[in-house]
Image (tube, rainbow, N blue to C red; front, top):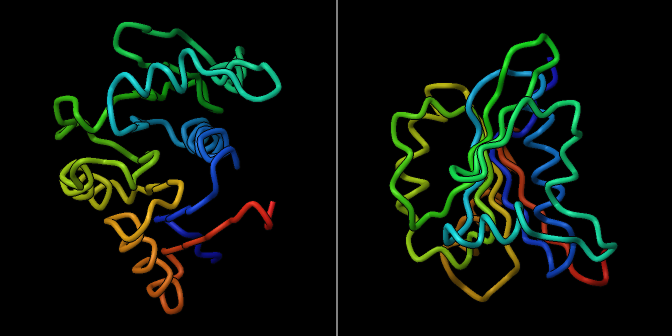
Length: 178
């Protein structure tokens, strides 16, 4: 059986497409495995700006990267998207900020921590990790490098772990790489 990573640390340069990649990965998981998924930004207003109002360099709205035929409904107030799965069940994708009320007890299967280097605290990860472990879940931590901080430490740890544990993956992409 092929073992795939469950925990990703993606240190990519600015404008490398971290959130578009992460959103597409999350959609693939939500489409094939019904459940609750999350997408966390450092601040709640960043979730709205990046996903619900964001536009890429080509002028395409970020939310339009979600195929319309998958969307059952969108709750703009809660920043929650309900999508149909490949077996006609439902998955939810909730967008929120690490500064918002905790999502403990939400039965999460996986999600994204975007721009993790600028989180004021790593408490949100500490709260969500037990749910992911219980649900055999996954997480992507993406960020632009911003010096030696909690993301740099996490990235280095995942890189070290990936040498012996296939559940961890760490990658650095510079402007030269892309």
